[in-house]
Every structure is written in C-alpha cells, then in structure tokens.
Image (cartoon, rainbow, N blue to C red; front, side):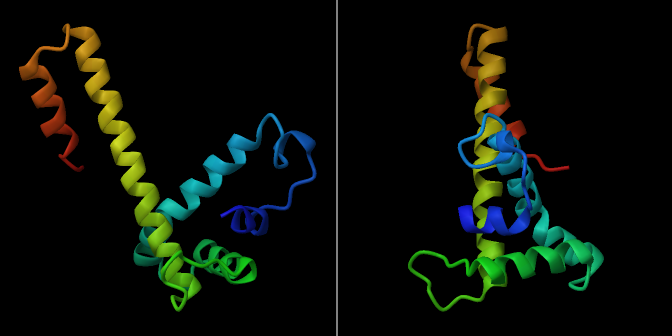
Length: 122
C-alpha cells in the first residue's frame, strides 16, 4: 500500500513524508481517493481524470492483492476500496454506539437503535 501512496503523491515536505508528523494526512487523502474510486468510475466514467490517474498510479506501483496474484491493478483498487469502506463503516458504527452509550448510560434499547440505524444508508 505504501508504494501506491508514494505513486499517488509527489511530496517534498518532510512532515508529509513517511515517518513525518503529518503523514497521516497523506494516508487519509489516499484512503479517501481509493474509497471513492468505484463511485467515481460509475458516476463519471472510466475515462475520468481522477480515476485514470489512480489507475496509472496503481499500475506504476504494481499493486497486488495477497492470495490473488493474477488480479489486475484495477480489480485490486476495487478490493482495496471495499476493504476501506468496510473498515470505515465499522468505525462509524463503533463511534455511534459509543456516543449513545455515553449519552444514555448504555441502555440496551439505545445500543440496539444505534446498531440498526448504522445499517441505514442515505
């Protein structure tokens, strides 16, 4: 994944380089771009500049998916996107449940409501 991030951004500010104090900002930006990759392709078409640039970076970084070495770089991007989305959804769910538990002493009913509501999509 680090090769992909390095291919995505040309960085010359020490704080944003690997090990820098602001590297997490770069990682968050990369994760957001990868997360939204399938939607950008769907909504804007595969020739969209953002999608095309991300595909070029993935090819340049020679990204692979563990256990599935024959996948194309585009398919790997889609799998990365799905994994990021899954983790994001889990983090949101945990956060919502924590907010409810803190606000109402963690009643079972409110925790259940938080769990159900986290499954509702816009």
